[in-house]
Length: 349
Image (cartoon, rainbow, N blue to C red; front, side, top):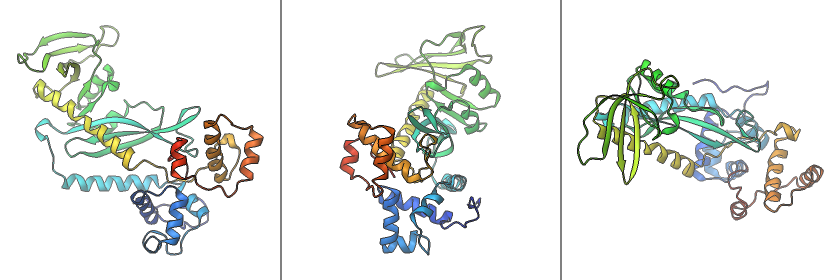
């Protein structure tokens, strides 16, 4: 595993093993904040003996250590766990091939994540995920700023011989050609009005869900038409029409429809991930450059007070904000009811 190293001359008081234990404990116990976790690490016998460093850790040292996030080490842990899980879990739908659902999802970021610009008033990171549909586990992931395009990550996620399963956002005729050149298969939802130049029609079963199956060149000639032919399937379920582009010629049209239906599992995973793990950021908050303040506590208190004043349309002037914060050095974490009512649950450490 890559070593977690201190950024300066001062040795780390929280090594990666303790950091990882803290993350797991934080999510399992659903602590409300980093400060709440630190309080438990100090007062609870089990947490103090099993989770916390032998000599304990102070608040400033804890948040300074967490700022590094251990992203490189966490990536290594994910890769090792994924490899072990892949050897143990049974594979479903093997007759359909090696299926990987690909999608991206935005994650709320904190002020210290300067790279995660999404809008002027909002910071979000984006996770690009490859989800093994045969074993229902993540297989690869990449983290970028919120504005990053999702399509370029398909080539990084897929291996030759795998089939990427994607929604309509990933429709790009140049990419369809590229993926075929890379010997990678795909099943991609496409727009209903996409131009199709038919090369030949395939027979469809009368009375079935499939009403269209053809080998085509996709796109407008001379503009965005694919150079390589591919297969387009149209089918109807519950009065909703789906158009799918694919280079899987070995399966029936109904099996292609089944593959796209299975893509819903990645949406279920994202929902579980955000709802139950909550994707909270257990990291210290460095002040945003606009705050012109080095103490991370300033940013946290500023964010709390700003959110409350914005809800009541009573946002004070800049000078008033500084005065307000300086007089509230002992700011307490709001209770859950207040947080819920002001719609800032999970946004404050």
